[in-house]
Length: 159
Image 1: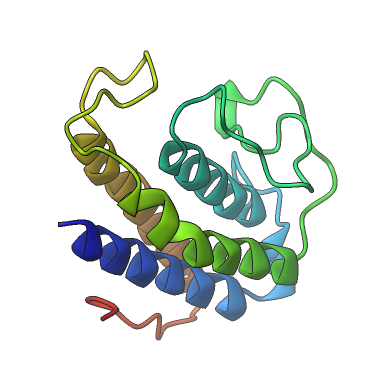
Image 2: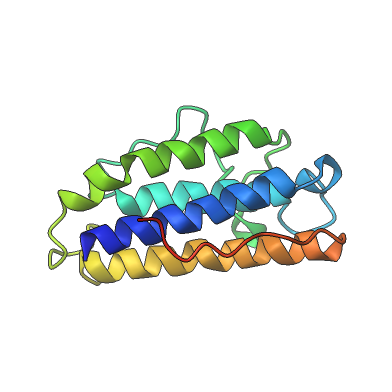
């Protein structure tokens, strides 16, 4: 079960990397949407990393984290005016991929999630986390389609 989780996280994060690399600069920080493209990418990566952690207390945000950058839309209490660079987000996604095996293999899948607002066990938390990540990948793919960019490949698994 743990290897399958590592595989699905890796596949999803590699799909996210495709959405980053295919995004044109003018779409990356376009403010015509409630949340710019870059902020959806960072939100996805931030929460993926958070929920891969044992709990909120032990979570260390990315070194480049800026206050409020992980919040989307109306929930964003702070306006973040400077976009993260695409290369930074690709690197962050790769860093998360590199830690998957260690983080997932040390966890007891029957233990509580570690996050009081998510009353479920670790296994269900991973399913929740993957659904959240894929939700935003779909959102980013749709934004790419809206400007005529296609070709984000489906990655089924990483073995």
